[in-house]
Length: 306
Image (cartoon, rainbow, N blue to C red; front, side):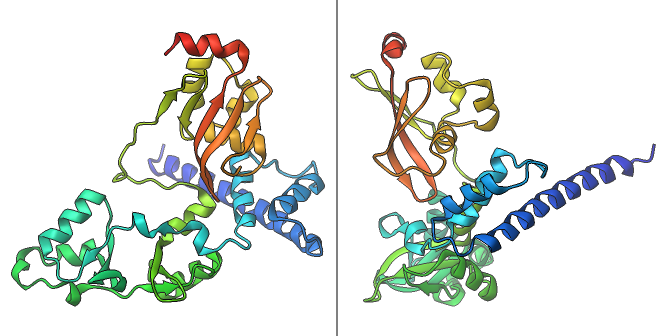
């Protein structure tokens, strides 16, 4: 057998999968044309599409539903909803030396850093690690003002889709969010915007974080939304059905599926097992931390595994 055949087969299979999903999206968004007069939310529009679709169409799996829902939810979402707040921004002063810049990039795990003079409100642009490393053998001559790149400055009210298009046009992938007085409120990268559609993106440089699972005295527990449902069930016995396990892998995914959307902080989502999930931390695109309120039948189980 020709060695190239398996590669061609895999390539064709991937191409066919992409075409199939592309066709699904086209068919679904053709449906949007007929729903334009409807003034409901994006989630309600999505639900109407689900109800009105032909049962003979190619089925849409759980992950594809999430992608489609995320695209619809972008309507009306602003940069203020997705930006990294000022308190969480890591930046570098324009007078910093080469080793100082490299140390910050290594410590914080960022390949781009905003550059400022005196304070962050006097932002000048940003620096990329590629530009920094090019000066490795010329440390004495290095100057941030010489290698810094232009950054976009945008208003917090700007639409997510508008900024994605502007980043694509300008080829600038970092923007500083400024208020009406010119002060910096936050920062957003193209990765932040893409994550609005596809979810959290992690690469080989992202640090592994230990997922918290904290027991509370009243018989409940607090868990990271990324906790695998198998780990939760190991503490609380079986909770989810076989069908639910096929659709979701994490606690956050289970809560999203139960609610049919990203629930807001303070909301309580009930499960048929009797458990309740209280949302402790969330942003517009994902749940971050959840309190599991145990049913009476499992209080004893939780107590015994402390």
